[in-house]
Length: 218
Image (cartoon, rainbow, N blue to C red; front, side, top):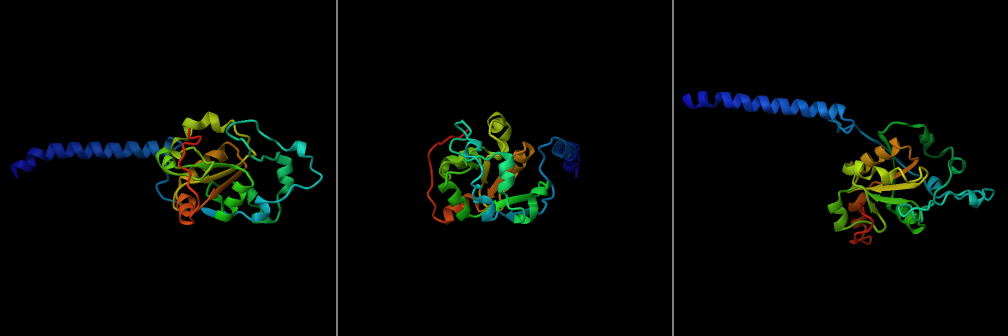
């Protein structure tokens, strides 16, 4: 009993410190602007139709009006000016989801759609995982922008044309890194953001080729 009484003040101090630490962490998480939700909300995932991803440009559109960015980051990316992109979009596709503004809505693509986009050399493929995972293996031509280190890549991201087809992936359908990166890109007014939902795990499971080179990790 004497021993318990001797350590009682120490225990109280530890409990006070832990309580204050938890309170400070909760306040920071709430007001920092980068906080993580304490309760995970169900996200709306919509499958991108082929009619939107692979619609052909009408013959009356002058090819000179297609934007071709001169940048090492966006090399070989097909980018279409806003008015033309609007003309190409099927109004009935994806139930007019272009009007949605909720960050809980994400457009996902399948493995076959991703393969076709990569084969046609369209889009900027971004691996949202950490640098260590990226170095161990990634999808060919993917660049590494870790979702938890977005601020370190801000100057590079803002230089990318907003009409660029942004193709994101992380580990799998339960991984939130691609969603975090998508939210950040949406805040910067990128218009065409797609997530390969099955991610790296799905790519490996399908027996797709692995790139172990350093690539353009930043």
